[in-house]
Image 1 (cartoon, rainbow, N blue to C red):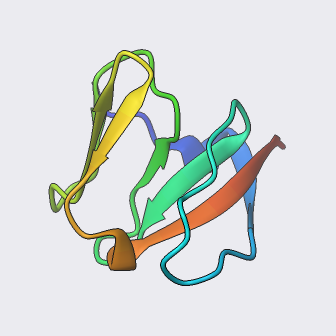
Image 2: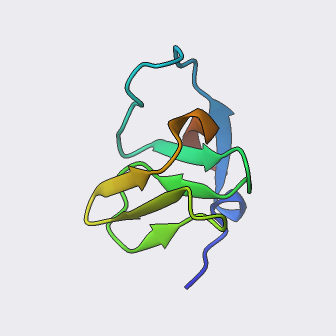
Amino acid sequence: MKIDLRKIYRFEAISHPAGAELPTGGDIYYECVECTHVVSSVPHIVSHCECGNLHGKGGKVDIKDQAKVKPVRGKLK
């Protein structure tokens, strides 16, 4: 099932120092810079971006290239 989170949430960029660990939380999402897909930082259902850089399930996200990930905060529209 493909869900476009941009229809539900308004996303704002979070300042994140290069090389630092990515933040996680219920309102934190990761945007893939390559394919612009958004995945929750703590996904409870299987979630992935189009290019395969982000893949998550069971509350954890696997990231192939962290340099291509932008953390964002999601707020309901």
